[in-house]
Length: 139
Image 1 (cartoon, rainbow, N blue to C red):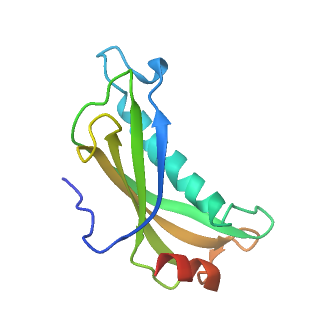
Image 2: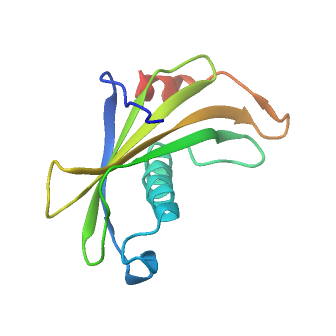
Image 3: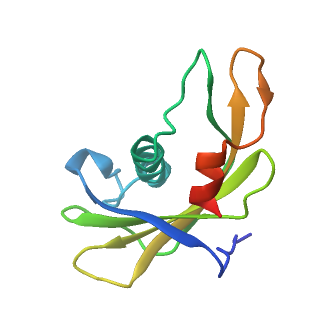
């Protein structure tokens, strides 16, 4: 089953991530688990840059599901251009989407993924409405 990224999404961050030799598996390509790690890296970078780092004594984001469509194999050496998008804000949640391409093959998508993010009050262990500052970023 392939998940489709929505047409209507807002680009919020681009960053370059180096492919490390140790990211490859015995088959000579980047291991599938690392694609999720690359998505996590760009998502966390965006959250930190937006002022939304998790605060265990307060509020912050929790990922409730994640997916990745593996389109082409990534291989060492090289650099990944990761693009982070947001879409579909709800009362307590929003979706993030990430595309991965190689910097030496601009426009060629190697993988695309996403995650549903819910804003949580950590001490209460329950979802709370998105803060106004965050809602302004994801709308």
